[in-house]
Image (cartoon, rainbow, N blue to C red; front, top):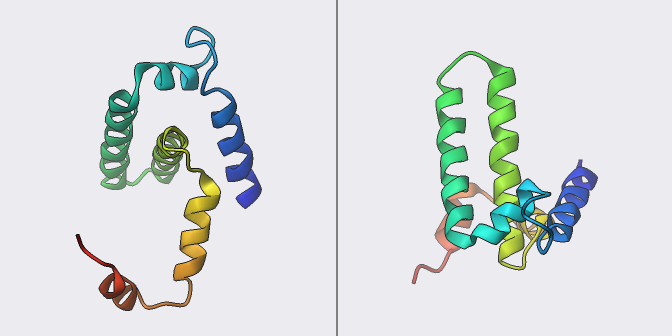
Length: 106
């Protein structure tokens, strides 16, 4: 599964400077960070609304949309799937309560 995220992250990165007229992903980058942030928010809301229903296929489709747009945002910030996967791996085996308590709040 990590391979899918890695390939998708690479594809997103490759479209970062592409033609907005030829690629939805390139058009997101061309519209700037605020547009990407807005899209992540919209997709997250759609995911939550889908979770209220009983259609698991719809929920999974909306989750995929959220993940995709989050990967676009990560790419815009110079990050990628490996960064998130490494953080999840770092947290593996640590109690959620202990992990949250260990965070430094600014």
